[in-house]
Length: 137
Image (cartoon, rainbow, N blue to C red):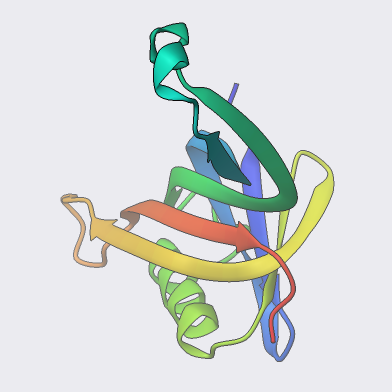
């Protein structure tokens, strides 16, 4: 089952709805490794490594989906594309709603591909968006 991802940004009216085909949540945890030297007589025992968990987490959402004339919440696909580009180019943080949870963060990368149609006005765009959860400074 696909879900909608809804992006909003303070200072920009409205929202952008992305009809998702894939949402990947990547959580990376920072670990430090401390290798303990052993005397030459114990080299055959294998290395001894201590792991130090720094409790520093990074959460990135890799979102794949599309804008079509039927999924944009009132905007045309082209208007939704332009609004998303405006949000990204404006800088600063944004809010992403997914499965009833709001995440604050910022855009890391966005790829927008116009899908060919028989219409004069493009009505289908493929989106790949990387959204990093965090507080914008």
